[in-house]
Length: 145
Image 1 (cartoon, rainbow, N blue to C red):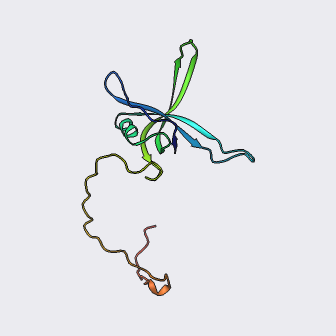
Image 2 (image 1 turned 90 degrees about the horizontal axis):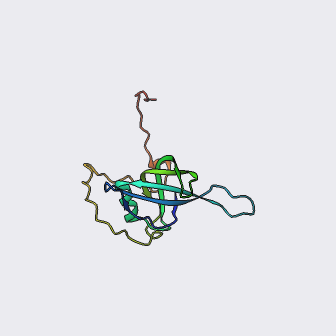
Image 3 (image 1 turned 90 degrees about the vertical axis):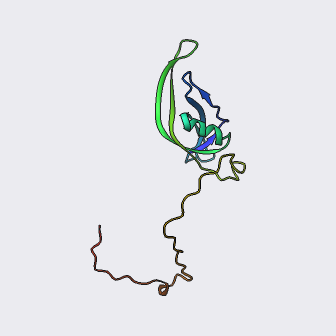
């Protein structure tokens, strides 16, 4: 979970598969005494509908949670040096910040309305939390654990 370093850009492969790569700044959980907290910068790649989702709803500075797997790959740079890239291949991404943090409402189609639950009973209201607000349930059933 962290913040996007730059706006993600949607690209397509030669076979028209959507892909995007982006970097997430993740704050470390600790800081040395007298120093500011450091951040790690993690490269992420997303494919297909996940890539389209990221490019549509996330911008630079947006808080994002990424669930995926680590992938390493080797390649040769332009100077002929062997390099290794380590990145997260995103399976799922999620919103983490509030609407206020991300600049307001999202430009997306409304979701279909869900059917109401079959039986919607109001939750009981306990005014004081005193013992007379609760009823002891006596049962001789064996507990399942």
